[in-house]
Length: 150
Image (cartoon, rainbow, N blue to C red; front, side, top):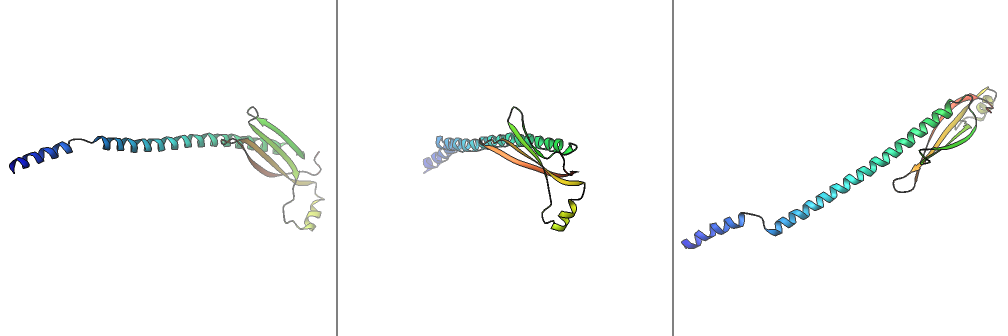
């Protein structure tokens, strides 16, 4: 019995001394899955940063066109179009008379005698989408200008 007692602690020490090949392989598989998930997450966030940059450029273009068209004196009814950044961002601006919704007909007729009127200035911008299509958004404002602008 003494011989059996001497062998069992030594055998237990050998088993606890290191990892088996199977344990090491499982650890590598888990590490690979986690690393792959992290790389996909980082790649997705880089794509989002690129899309946000394109959107920011398009917003700046829309705001500058809106400011330029709205600051023209006198306001001219009509439509203008253009593009920037080698045609990547296209814009279309329109100036048209505008009457607020829900205005009673009597008030509308009375406003026709005034020398000024309200104009709606709208800018629509199209730019490339990271997914391959086109994205479009619009900004609009109102300005007072002389009636019957050329």
